[in-house]
Amino acid sequence: MRKRLVILLLGGLFSALVSGTALATPSTQIWIPSTDIQAYKTLHLGIDDYIRTEKNPDGTYAPIVYDAGITAGVLPFQKVQAEIGIDYIRYGTTYDDNPVYFNAKIGVPEDAFFKWQPAVAIGVYNIGTRGGSIIHNTQQDISYGLIAKTLPIIGRLSVGGYVGNGGNVNFKDQNGNTDNSGVLASWDRTMTEISDKLWMGVDYQGGNNAYGATSFGASWAFSKNVSVLVGYDIYTKKATGGQPTFTTQLDINFP
Image (cartoon, rainbow, N blue to C red; front, side):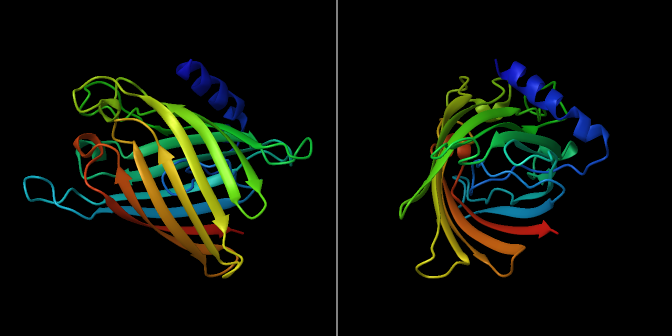
């Protein structure tokens, strides 16, 4: 089922890829994907880092993870939208020999077809370029589905699930068993009572694997097209996700 989702999604976006449109990373909350989709003919540049806030048991700090990516909106419709992307990620591990990852998402925004209709999105991210040995295998290939609805006062609530490549080391639990699926959930809201420029959110990715985490963050829009998010990620299992990370995320939209 996971492979079929990847094939269908990428196949539907193939025409955009071959037409020369720039690629990009998926629109996210803090750690997990969101139902947001980049508008047609617009680009989004994201520069993120994840810094460990505690030492490993051996007294060392894990390497800082850097992620730079571009996202492009590729469908000229209001009711059905899509984005595609490419990331350049440095983990400070053997993964850095193949640092390029691809992403794609298609979905429907809130109220597109009827009042109170939730937003719906399906996608895939961290499509790596190298298979083979589990140590070097970058094919994380995380497929996901989400629905989201914005409620008065409360804000936006999102829920869904994901499935990753069970043959990838990131989807093993602390005992080495495959753990490649889980729940996705989030809350986010623009804090208009304070400022229209202030956004806050909390998200959760289930699983006793490297991706299982709860994250908290806030962003400030310095202008219409530039914002900076700061957040904190607590991984479900330190044996697989490692020590908590502090993250900063610069977001720039063009035009």
